[in-house]
Image 1 (cartoon, rainbow, N blue to C red):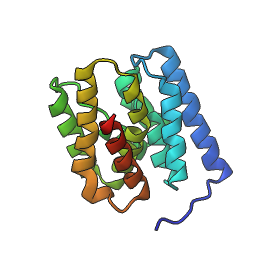
Image 2: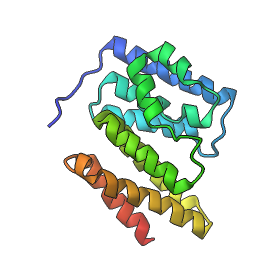
Image 3: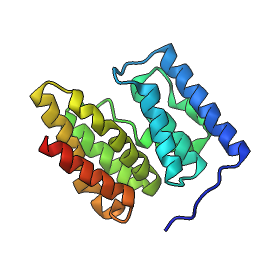
Image 4: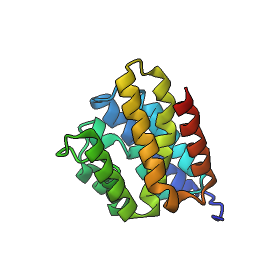
Length: 179
């Protein structure tokens, strides 16, 4: 069991600075239709609930910026350090891979190689993305979205099976799949 973390006032300020950075980048230009600010903050808060260290929380807050804004990884590295930049990079799709399933396979492979911190960020991201499934009206798109959730569960089960939050996610996927 993971030790409970108390975030110091300094750490809280750094997390708040990451939230301001996130909001600024999204307001400058955002390519995603979902409420990205809310989604990203929910990911960060859930990581805090899981007692993750500061760099993991900050990377969780910023995980979609490279894909969905004009933010560059160098900016994240300069503002928040190498570990945060590495985690954000690891959780970012390779734009050179055009095939949807192949891009997912590559992403999850990279995340697994990076280890637990990247896995927990992606797990929480997946959990927070799943409720958007009900808003999808296109059956083909729904099938695609469920594929990625089932793929993540199947591919990462061994690494994440001990986490209660992973069990919650598995159950969510089963429930959405039944709808």
